[in-house]
Amino acid sequence: MTEGRFLHTMIRVGNLERSVKFYTGLLGMKELRRRDVPDGKYTLCFLGYGEGNKDGQGEIELTYNYGVETYDLGNAFGHLAVGVPDVAAACQAVRNGGGKVTREAGPVKFGTTIIAFVEDPDGYKIELIQR
Image (cartoon, rainbow, N blue to C red):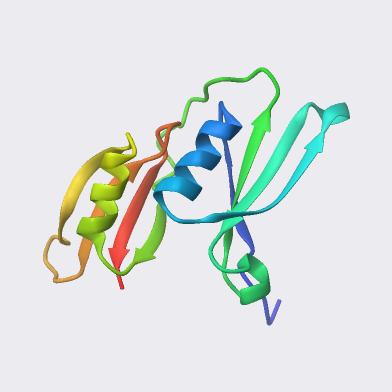
């Protein structure tokens, strides 16, 4: 393959509306599209910034499988990364919204880039990177 484009990352969530509220309300994403598939017993919800793939940006696909409330996150997945203008302010917004900050804003170890880590309602780690 000579040319490609990153489209999305899919994560499974135990409560779709709770997760949509986290990503839209606390991280400023917007819901781009949703597809409910009753025969398959799942719902897909795509979130992102701007127009998502239409703007050339990647998206997050939240997958809710009917009746599954929790998942074993395993130890292979690391984190999602989101660029924000002010990491400390983003952490405060997450905290004010009831979200969990697991690493406060500060320089990355052995560097100067300002980062922080937060967790979504299912425990997925999100790195906030100051841009």
